[in-house]
Length: 112
Length: 115
Image (cartoon, rainbow over all chains, first blue to last red; front, side, top):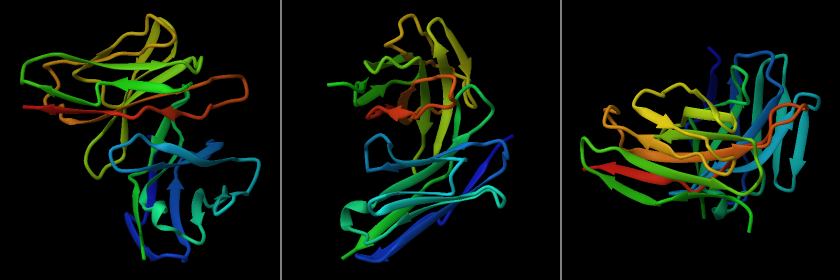
């Protein structure tokens, strides 16, 4: 079945540095790649997504890049701030029916 | 105030009891989903429904049941057959259309603990 690998599982950066999280997927037909942020005890919130007709999308300090040939997509956070500390999940469509398969998550910690 | 709500936020159950988790959305979304999240892990799909009066099993449906009698509501019942029900349960909804997969929006979650 379809699966996605997410790395790293934990990431610690200094405030102001950049953070990059990468996901690799198996289904070449995938055409939608969202990223979610989950704060402790809350539901995941969509922060950015990309569709397969573009290679990069930016929204202020957050960007997502997509390499369909290599089957991976990455989340980039620049000028990190303490409030960026959370768990980040990638996802992609799996098996039809509007289902998503989620990565295992990356715990990002931004240190002062 | 539009969105997706789940209740209760915390739920305690004794072994052998069934319990129902509520999920309501006023986003006019056709599709709704239930996920289970265990500590330090990702989300696993339990059940999903693309339209009223229809639903399909996800990856870990055993020990769970759902209904979709109304577009706005998608309750999940955790039955006594679920051997390890303690987890964080998340409900989501999405619009569907001819353009493809719609963004999933999540509720705040229900933390279920079996005593």
